[in-house]
Image (cartoon, rainbow over all chains, first blue to last red; front, side):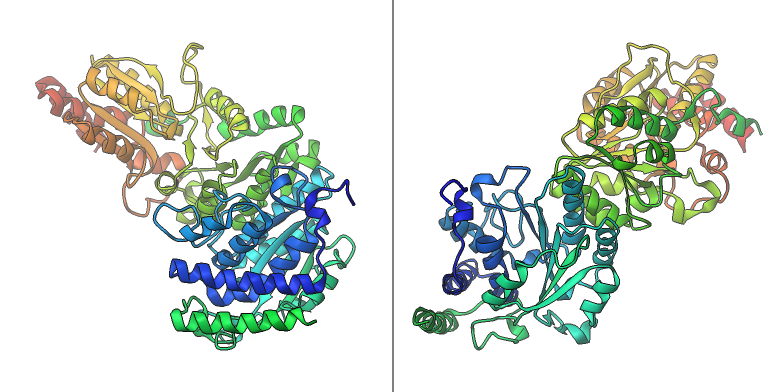
Amino acid sequence: MGSLPAYLNIIMTIKELKLKSNEYRKKILKYIVGANAGHTGGSLSCVDILNVLYNNVMNVGPDNFSSPDRDRYIQSKGHCVEALFVVLADQGFFPESDLETLCKYKSHYIGHPTRKIKGVEQNTGALGHGLPMAVGTALAAKMDKKDFRVFTLLGDGELPEGSNWEAALTASHYKLDNLVAILDKNELQITGPTASVCNTDPVDLKFEAFGWGVHHVDGNNVAELTEVLAKLPFLERKPSLVVAHTVKGKGISFMENNIKWHHGVPNKEQYETAIAELDLDFANIKTL
Amino acid sequence: MGAAIENTGTNGRPNQDVFAETLQQLAERDRDIIAVTSDSRGSGKLVKFGNDLPAQIVEVGIAEQNLVGVAAGLASAGKKVFAVSPACFLTARALEQIKNDVAYSDNPVRLVGISAGVSYGALGTTHHSLHDFAVLRAINNMTIVVPADNFETAQAVKLAVQSSKPVYLRFGKKPMPLLTEDTNVGFEFGKGRVIKRGADLTIIANGETVYPAVLAAKKLEADGIAATVVSMHTVKPLDVTLISELAAQTNAILTVEEHMVNGGLGEACASFLIQSGYHKPFKIMGIPDEYTVTGSQVEILNHYGISESGIAAEALKLIASANGHHNASKTANKITNANA
C-alpha cells in the first residue's frame, strides 16, 4: 500500500465514514448559515453518497486532479453544491476557510459548482446537463482505452428533463460500463412530492428498459453504499444506475422530509438545535 | 429571372462540402478529432467521414441537447470535437447546453451549424436559423465564424481544430465562388477580410451574402461608385479596428447578412459605431422581424434585397444621403423604380 498514491491509502471503515458524514453535515449547515443561502435539504440527502464516493470509491484527489486518468465526478444536481464544497475541502482540494466566502461578493464559491474551484469538473446548475456530459467523458475513456470511471449525481426532481433520457439512450448504445449515474431519490422537489409533480417511477424499470444495470440502495447508509458501489459495473457492457433512496434533510429531525428546507436557511436557534442533534449522533457513532 | 441567376455562384462548391472534406483530411492525421452528429451526417456531408473513420464519429440520434452535452464531455477529456447539426436546431434546441456545457464550462467544442440562414428555403421557419448570431453573441466565451467562400471555410476549419476555446462555425448549402484570387488576403478569426477597396462606401457582409455584395460593388463601379467590401466572417469578436478605419476612410456603411436584423452583424457594427461617435449614413440589410416570405433561399434573399441589384440599390441610396449627391440620388431612384 505504501507505494500507492495517498488518496488510495485512505480507505475508510464504516465507522469512519459515519463520522465523516456527521462532520460534513455540521459543515454544510455552518456554511449555509454563513452564506445565508443554500440548498439545505438536498445537500443533506446526498452527502453520504459524496462521502463514500470520494473516500472509498473514486480515484481522484488534489494530487491527480490534472491527470487524464483520474475518475470524474459530475454533479448534475448542482444546486446541492454545499455538500460538494464541504467534501472537496475535506479532500484537500482547497482550504476549508475558503468556504467562509460562500455566496459572498466576488467569491468563486457560488451557489452552483464552477470550474474556478479545484475539484469541480463541469459548471452545472441548470438541470439535465450532468448525464450527457458524463456520457461524453465516458465515451472519451473508451476511445482512448483508459479505465477511468465517470460518476454523475442526479436529482429525482431533474429526471423529467428530456436530455437525461437522450443521454441514457446514448450511454446504452455505446455500452458505457464505465459510467455510473447515482440518483439521489429523496422524493421531494421545490413544488412538492416528486411523484405528484411529475411521476418518474418506476425509474428502475425505465432505466433497465433503456439498457442500464440498476441497483437500489439506502442512499444515507454508508455501509450499503460502499457495498453496492463495489459491484460496479452492475452488468457487463452496460451503464450503471444506483437508485439511492434518501431522505431530504437527512440527519436533522425537523428538516427531514420537510419541503420547507429545500432551500431553507436555519436561524440561530434552529442551527444550534441541529448541531446538538448531530453532536448526539456523533457520540452514538463513537460508541459503535 | 435575372435576379435568381446573379445570386447563384456556380464556379465553387458548397462551403459545408469543403468543411467536411477539410475536417476529414485533418482527422486522418489526428485521431483526437471527433465528429458528433445528430442524424445529420448526410446534411453535414460527413457520410464519407463516417465510412472512412468510423472510430472518429459519434452518432447520438436526433437529440441536439444530448449532442452538445456529449460533445462537451468528450472535449473535457481532450477530444477535438466538432458537433455538427443543422444551425436551426443546434442553436435553439441546444442553446442551454451551448451556454453552460460549452461556453461557461469552457469546453472547446467546435459547434458546426449547417444549412444555415435560409438555406433550407421552402422548408420554412422551423428549418431557418435567423437567430443564431443574436443568441450566440449574447453568450460569453463564444467565437462566431461565418465563412463566405471555400477558402475561408477550409481556413476556418483548420483554425477551429487548433482553437482551445469554443467556436461556432456556420455554413450554407449553396455553391460559393472564391471572393478573391489574391492569396495575400489571409484569414484569421477576428480579422475581417477586405475583398475590394473603394472610397465611397463600405459594405460589410458575411457568409453567403458577401458574394452578392462583391457583385454589387462591381455594378456600382460602372456607375462611378467605389465600394469597399469586407467579408466580416467573424461576428464575435468583431474586428472593430478594421471597422474604425473604414468608417473614417469611406462615407457610408452598409451591412448585409443572412440573419434577422435583430441582434446580428449589422447591429453589432452599429453598436460599436454609434458608441465611437460615428455619424455618417448607415444601413442594415437582413431579414426583417417577420416570418419570411416563402420560397427558395435565393427567392427569399432576393425578396429582401439581398442580391446584387438589391445591395447596389441600397448602396446608392446610402451614398445619396451621405453627400446629397444629386446624380447619385437620381440613379438610386431610377434603380429603385426599376426594381419595383
